[in-house]
Image 1 (spheres, one colour):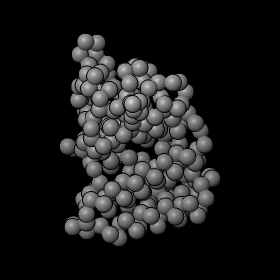
Image 2 (cartoon, rainbow, N blue to C red):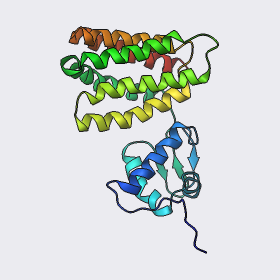
Image 3 (cartoon, rainbow, N blue to C red):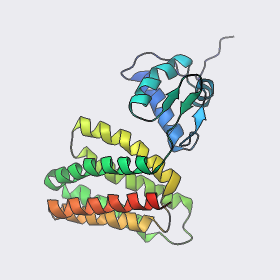
Image 4 (tube, rainbow, N blue to C red):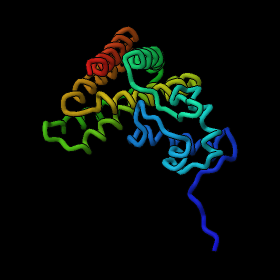
Length: 226
């Protein structure tokens, strides 16, 4: 009897299965199966991600180029550790990209979309209490990520969007390791977001970029304190 395998095998490098392999690796980073600083063998990674050896070999050059893994011959594959230089560089990159996004949003982001973002934030904030459950903060993370993604989408610039996507993986890893949203951090982050939203609604590019700079600096400082 012939059985079907769930292992991902390579077909092409511009999408399809290779894209699925990349998304599978990213999911493993964000759900904690792969941790910053972890060193794994190629065999372990193949088994963990249900990839074929060929799919992994096609994927590794992209992951190396994006700085998401370090490859050591005869030793294994390592997820880069989160250290102070990484945090500084990731947040500096984020500031540059999102400052540009804010300027585009001031010019072109519809007021209705901004008002909808404001409501999403206010709805979550209204439910934050010391005893709030994990589901609320998971929802808060979705709103947080969605807000930044919406700002970047307003640029309609594929190069900026790609750079932001790669850097956002680093930012998410930093957050998971150091500053996950909770009752002490979510209100501060969301109030920063609301200041950005209000400045964009006012179509004030100086106030909007300053609000975004403050937000990113606050997040960076929280990460570097721990």
